Length: 208
Ligand code: HEM
Image (cartoon, rainbow, N blue to C red; front, side, top):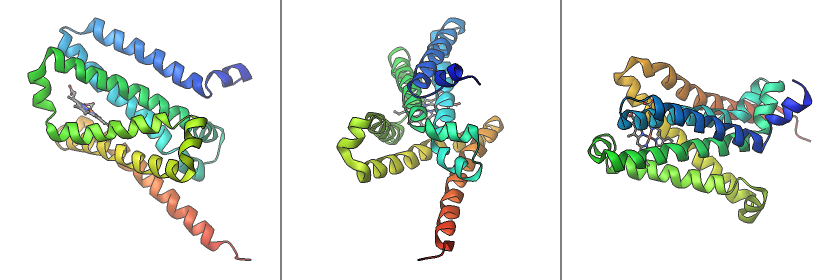
């Protein structure tokens, strides 16, 4: 990679590239769908997948760098914040598509999303909004490092839980969802393993 292409995939340009890619995907889904409802459902499913991919990259950044320190994992760790904001953008599109489905096919949406979905899913959106809002140096400084770490740790585990519930429950009845459900479990295992490994490493260091 030369320096110019390196810069193109660093920082806020990642968020820009993801936003452009999402706009393209949404347009293609909308234009190729047989009926508007199918198009919106396609957008809901596609954005759930793009969101999960971006979330997984941000969620595992520190753990993969701990186990496999190399150029790629350094990039992932360095850009964790922007991968997180890109996830928020993708999930905003998920929400907008859900609201559109509610407008054109309220009975279909009600069949898929009950009050519990709205409460637990809604809380995930509160976390996503707060985490995105505190992803800037000024807002992060405003709440302080302790509150920032608490918000981003609790929020990310809670969002993981919602993905786990969505994909594991689908995998239980639709075998095609088993690979993504396995990835959901794997990324949590990776984070826990990194925590344990760091704790072991710290306790084995000679005390002065
Ligand atoms: C505000 C509450 C939410 C509602 C009402 C909602 C609604 C829906 C609906 C109706 C679908 C099914 C689309 C279809 O198969 O046609 C869906 C899929 C999904 N949603 Fe959401 N959602 C919400 C929040 C969330 C959140 C917060 C997450 C993750 C953090 C999430 C992750 C997923 C996933 C993983 C799928 C499966 C996509 C697939 O089948 O491939 N949703 N959602």
